[in-house]
Image (cartoon, rainbow, N blue to C red; front, side):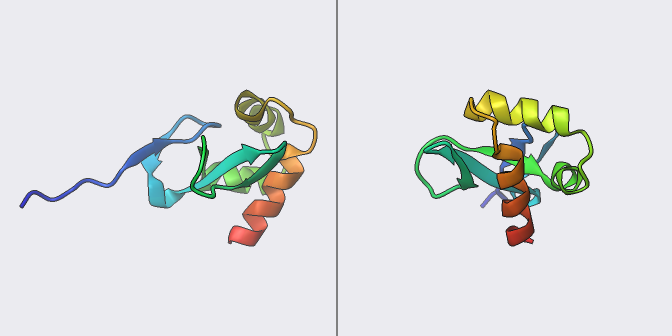
Length: 88
């Protein structure tokens, strides 16, 4: 039986292609950024971009990527930081 390859996904911030285990999966639901709950559209952010978020580096690039996905960026960066700290 052939060996199955791991699924490859793209980070919305840096556009790098990585396996799913190296990414965090998020979604926008009711104008809130949450961990993916299995229903609806979602997107991925890599660990490197997660650490840049926590260190407040390249926030414009991260906000721009989140705005493309969620369309309302008022508090998404703060919500992203909260999710990342709880996931780790």
